[in-house]
Image 1 (cartoon, protein in one colour):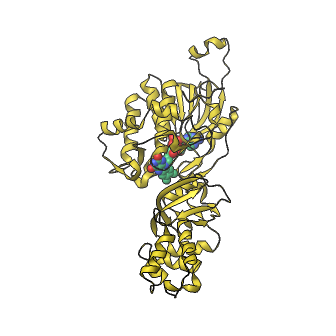
Image 2 (cartoon, protein in one colour; image 1 turned 90 degrees about the horizontal axis):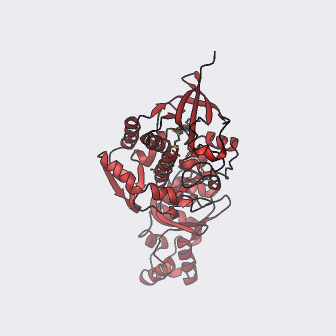
Length: 417
Ligand SMILES: Cc1cc2nc3c(=O)[nH]c(=O)nc-3n(C[C@H](O)[C@H](O)[C@H](O)COP(=O)(O)OP(=O)(O)OC[C@H]3O[C@@H](n4cnc5c(N)ncnc54)[C@H](O)[C@@H]3O)c2cc1C
């Protein structure tokens, strides 16, 4: 005989950043909440984030820090639950944190403290969490006998879920279902496309997705140069599609990484070139002309090593002035020096690809925000179905913005489920 389904007010799919936030917020409103997590562990991305120190938010959060087809969508949730709200909770738990460059806030000790705080809030509010839970199917329950007018007062279950928990099949039902399964980035940390499939099952559109906050790879001779420079970091300005960021670049054995590359990767499309200013704030054409005047007998590489690492200067030399490598500055024409100077301020490179979802910190694109209420996170055409966090077409810049979106959207849904 089939046992009858266990009933909850709210089922949250995914025990990540936004799912946990949503779960305890809903439970604090008196809702009976269950969180289903497919993995063996909860909050894997939180634990791995910020090099184990979790860059949990930023002192300055603006809509302009987010990328979405609708740049206004994120505003309501970000205003409803701000960085200050999250910081207040972190302080209430006595978690030490520090402000780093660009107003980014990190734990001083460990990201484990953020996860422990979220789990403690879940525990205090009476949230039930089941790990090792694989969703097998979900369907909407047809509600009969209520007019459209009374739909919002109808407390009957709207969704029936079949899951496998610890190899056992179970039926669950709930009035509100929250999809907080995250996105495609880093499958080993829980990245999955399940949430998009559920959205599509209920007729929601999903925008095109691609890896974001991700290193670049190169297939041409430039790859060998990156390999030789692997480990070298320096502050540069990188521009692509009219967006610029100034931060550290890191040469790796596959190509280019570092915060500035992760930031610009969000604006890069296959085939695009990026432009690197190796010495932001310094007009290198003028600087080299002055150097020629003052140190006419010096080699170009010698004067440049005052500003750039020796290894990088050697690579630049072999690219841009191999014939004059051993000639003094006096033998360079002004035109040549100006051209080399301009190249150092505007070095254009064409990545062959990004490293993809394997290493991407986020997924750009996702559930089309036209289909979701920015005030409640509920699907506009599917009552009781909510989406939170990275699965939506909202992606933050590097700097704690993605977690802030998870907290804000999770909290918002938690109030309305
Ligand atoms: C290495 C790394 C470092 C990062 N560092 C930072 C940082 O310092 N600051 C910052 O702001 N952002 C950071 N991010 C981004 C941030 O982690 C995400 O944007 C954020 O975790 C998204 O929250 P979410 O709740 O939407 O999804 P997630 O936190 O990814 O949670 C989704 C959960 O759903 C579960 N799940 C998936 N499918 C199913 C299913 N079928 N059934 C049940 N459960 C399922 C997953 O196992 C996971 O636990 C980092 C990301 C990565 C990968």
